[in-house]
Image (cartoon, rainbow, N blue to C red):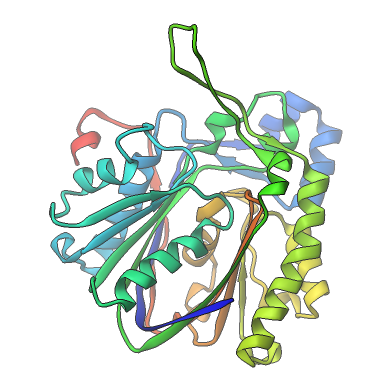
Amino acid sequence: MISILHGLSIRAVSSALPTRRLTLDDFSALFGARECARITKSTGINSVRIAGDLTSVDLAAAATHNLFSNADIDPNSIDALVLVTQTPDSLMPASSALLAARLRLKKNIAAFDLNFGCSGYVYGLYQAAMLVSAGGCRRVLLCTSDVISKLLRPHHHHVRMVFGDAASATLVEAGSHSFSFSFSTDGKGAAYLNTPLNYLVESSCSAEIGSLFMDGAQVMNFALEKVPAAILGFLEELQIDANSVPFFLLHQANAFMLQYLGKKLGIAQERIPWQVAETGNTGPSSIPVLLSTAPHAQQLCRDNLVTCGFGVGLSIGVAHISLSNTQLIPPLDLDQPQTQGKNA
């Protein structure tokens, strides 16, 4: 089913990246040069960003401040806040409430979290677009933020060398564009990509969070089999010729997957931009990070764009959007937190 929402615009997109990183030299020392060279060749990832002591709210706040200052946005004009995160600062209250307070947004707003991974940006756009299209909000702040490195075991090199930490901020507001969305969710694939949460009855703590587990082969099969069909079916239902789409903005999983998806879709590689070499797979932030870090980002500010996120769930989100009036803001590099940073 396709949902079409009207009266929309994406005003600006920004991101924030931790300055701390793990490089190919670091990985070689940990896992051996030969194994690292093999993984790097297939993923196209040379380094990943690591949050360290930074939290998801820290990164999201930095990305939002970056957007507010560069796009000249009054925080009091925000009517709702949507935060997409798999690594909240607390189980309760919602991290969106903590973020709203950090940003000093007005108190009469709706604020809520979405627990989604690599499809999360499209899910978040859908939520923000619905709030605006329904007429209840003029401006909705959509943030994505994960410190996924905190869920990775040090010796699991197949995920340690791929996933990185990042955040983004996107301002969705009333405008003249129509956005279309389509989604697919199959919880039967949960075993292939997950982080377990175990509630403990007899323990000094009430719950225990496991580490991220990924069956790389199964996730790859899912992406290469289901994603092209989802995108092509979406275009067919909307009666959009794939050749008329200037760019396909896909989840930045790794270089190999993006190249293979291009072949399966019959799309020239230059129409599927990728930017993972220095950031890694940043989950729900990967598409907005692509937009803010691409060397020629303003070339992406076009109508008739298709974006697609896919991953944990297992889930897929596809959207037809416009960035023709969007300001793409270069990322902010964020150092480790200082005392005043929590109240900035």
